[in-house]
Amino acid sequence: MPLFFATPPPATPPPAQTPGSNVTVTTCRAQLDPPPLRIAYTNTATQTAVEIQFHVVTNAGSLEDVVDHGQFATGKAIDHVFALPLNVSPLGFSSVRCVVAKVTYADGTFWTNPSP
Image 1 (cartoon, one colour):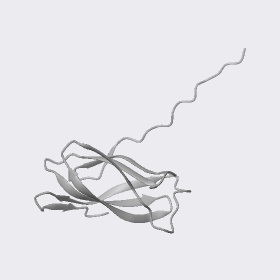
Image 2 (cartoon, one colour):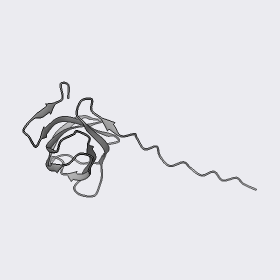
Image 3 (tube, helix red, strand yellow):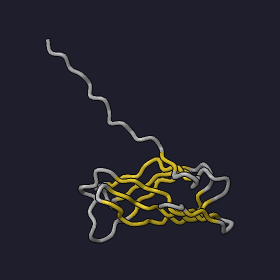
Image 4 (cartoon, one colour):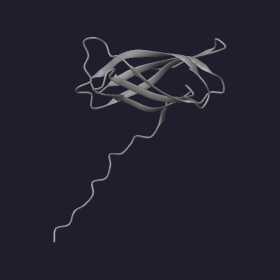
């Protein structure tokens, strides 16, 4: 009698936080559904963020920066999609990494990544 083994699901990378940013990125991936870039994250700072800039890095190098505007309260899960530049396709992106480059808070203060 043949034995069948279940294939384990692919490992989900753990949430990543750019040191000092107080933003935990839980998802950063290219997808075929438009818009093709999905970033899910949580603001872990003690105050509301109003703008978060992400530096998007692929296996082919740096892609671009995307900026999310809104009212991002402490602890609230955010899941947004973004367009890619016109000449860029998500095909071939075997890995995408989103590094927090800058966070602006509701009171006007901000944090900038010293090494994006």
